[in-house]
Image (cartoon, rainbow over all chains, first blue to last red; front, side, top):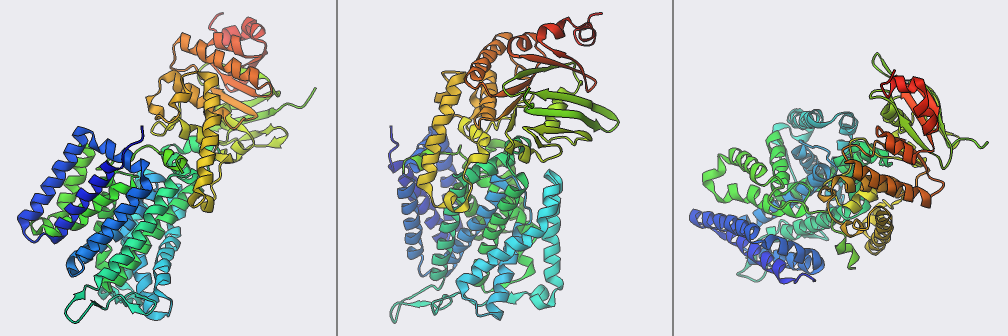
Length: 381
Length: 258
């Protein structure tokens, strides 16, 4: 029997409404109410088996559902067109998802650890700052170059990462992240501890930092343009990661992660696939960093600490290791909640740590555990 | 007489002070099934690991169809047409049976970035084609297996896992199949069933060459054309099952009689 399309659409609508409510909520009690409602909905969905129906309907009607999802996010940005802060949050969530997609390929698919996510995000951000300040490179290329720089500088880590496993590989990436931040702090050409200003994004002569004047009275937030940019990047990165996952490349990544010995016995070039996953992942993380820097107009070493790297890793684990879709609820929780709930702002690291521990204990696969590779989506076309 | 498919000469493998393979000579001809027996620690699995590149060979050489494979990386040796199973199963339990079989096909699949990302129709067609190949192969082992192609390998029973592991090694039609104790962890009935499957597969592929490590002498008697007995990394005896089983040196070393 073919799964109907409506369970996925209902789930999408309900989640969009929840996110919109969260972004617009101004009272603390409203935020808390939405969070509790989301938690209850999630529990109910699991208990009643709705999650399975939603997944099957989403898998069967992948094109329709992803089209509706994009339309809903566009609709959401339109509703928020005059709310600067809410749009900034939305963009941050989208770009965090892009960085999370990078980690998903590395950590979730190929099993290559990376505890320096914030450093690669920072490489993209600084690359964008330098290129946009010092060169006339068109800005879409600046953002792509940010990704390329992250991938390129990441290749420094390739040799030590291939020679180590587990904890030792993790330590190497941690050391790299700390070295990167220290390097930024002492490097005067890159602004030292004060950081650098970054020019706003310009596309075909339109400066994204200019508010969009509709008529004499109404003016839309300039973040609307950045929301469009973030959505394009996030959608492209998502499609890239999902298509890689559902190809023979994704299978090679899985084999490398699950059993290097068995993989090598059947001719898999373990080192090459690890390098590929690490580079693609760093490219995506750098891309997100570059776009983020151009949106916020400012980069400084304090934004790229080990703590920020841990946050990225916790998003990937919270959402469900290896499941790109899981990044959406995880990024929403980790990015939005501390901004909307002042009570937890100060304790956010403590709370995230607790949340990750609780998730690992009661739901080890994460909020949305990764399903088995589904070939039917490819077969139906 | 034709040249052997596999020709190992004076192979030496050392682990620290222990000599696990001590100048082993062993050759196998195309189409033969050779049983490799010997007490625990006599170097049987080490021999497989040396052939497939998982341990460093300290001396001697191994040739497959005239090509020197000594000291190559495992993934390069796989390309020469050697496939193996592992004593402790190495299925990817979280993945489907199909995904496991496709690992066996790794060297024939298209990993190009362009076709992986954009030629989705061609990928879907490749999946359908491979699924047919996989179902045919699985059906040769057990009529119930093809229906479970897209189930996780974890959901299978021990004997079905073994079958899938052997299918994973067979699916690319290797020249040489190395089976490392396929009966480990199974009941005598299951073992007998698996050997029937194996003989049927062998009957369909007369050119398939098999080396099988076994502790179960019944299995060796049933499937092997020739037996090689190892002890302390050296060849103790060689010949038909009857010859080897009657050899007093073998009986003393292996069967525990004096």
